[in-house]
Image 1 (spheres, rainbow, N blue to C red):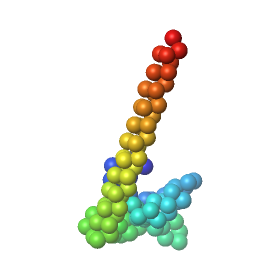
Image 2: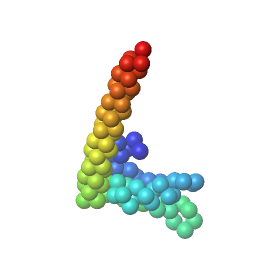
Image 3: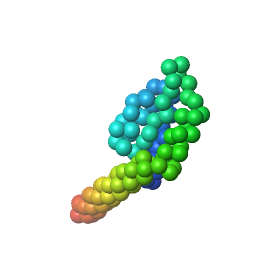
Image 4: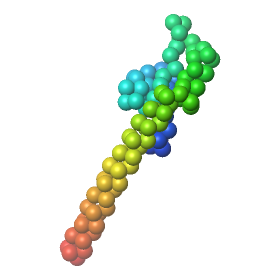
Length: 101
């Protein structure tokens, strides 16, 4: 999540438990690419090199960076709105508490 928050594309290399599902979700979201394992479950360095090159230099990487930056901006906007709402509610709570004294 921090990667998305900072607008950085993700190179997913899921190992176990929930990681494969999370990797698929962020790939579908358009903010990540997944390093695919072979039939034996191994990852080859050539695959890693190709993915890195793609994310750093290719058109794919540009699309990823654009998408993750857009999502990051939206997350920050929503978070700011939620913080403003929470602050207003706290201020109102304090005002109401002071009226009760």
